[in-house]
Length: 409
Image 1: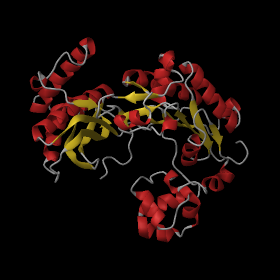
Image 2: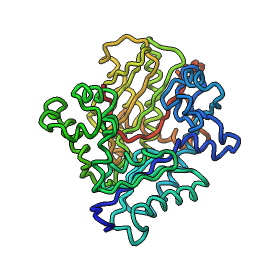
Image 3: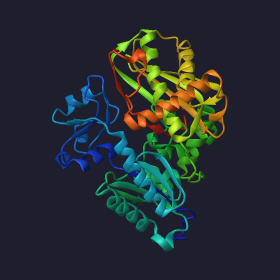
Image 4: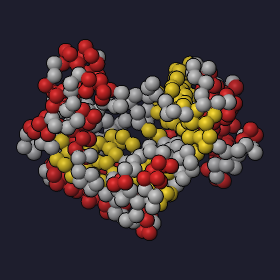
């Protein structure tokens, strides 16, 4: 082991991934402010290139606002199949460095490097070799890499010198390195939790490290102990090479706000079809379904329900989503309608069960449609209700995502 490192964990995070892929594939976009997302009035920015960021543009910003801030930006629609293709190549590359690779999303992953010094050198050399391998394998894409003795510190380190950065934090200095950083850098301190920490007089990670853990637990519950542990630069979690997607979701950002239940159900139907197709393609079934609505004033509302039996059938997902609509105590209008399938598990024999009940027969039909869509394109078969219907939605990313806190209010 190098020095006093009990473990060596690397976190690699691609730089402005979607935008960087677009600039890689189209050299005319290089050096220009670039926004990936829908150019429609209700679209959002999925990724902004580093040339656009000095104008104050960032991910999840409404496209209208982004274009106002950066009027010379080039807007390109996302190409998720291309991003997935490059992501798969990058994850395979990480597998050449370690058998334990834990993807967090398409563009970032943990790599367990403990015991690899003889193969790849010391932690700094490991980080540089990872970066160079990514650049060569992708034809020029850059990644920022953090290396430390825990997953948490490695993840914070990868964001420290973006883009194209490498930050190595030895374990004996990790706590002091974290101390001056704002509490927002604590893993799990989101927009709702950060103000609670500040209200307690805790503005930096060092403040949390010095706080009374009993006070933190009293005020924040288990989350308080979690923050205290991270602030000590302690994180016992292993790199989970067997981690799979915990949920698959599809959200529709609408061109016009809607109140009509029939219109909302139509968007849920689209989401259910997409999610079910992705579940079957991955050999997974869902044990739970959730529905998300976002109001015109950007308030997110969510409801979820465990299923009696796991499923990968769109009709079953939709029926559950339809039931959940009745649990919302808000009449709208809504600017976004989404669905998520969570608590995913391998399909196994589940998909073969009940072949002669209603959902079983429906699954056989959906599988047949999957085959047609693969051969002739996704729109070769459409529901009758969709024919002639005005497409008022701009689709947000319909990608698998890893989420430890599914559908929180």
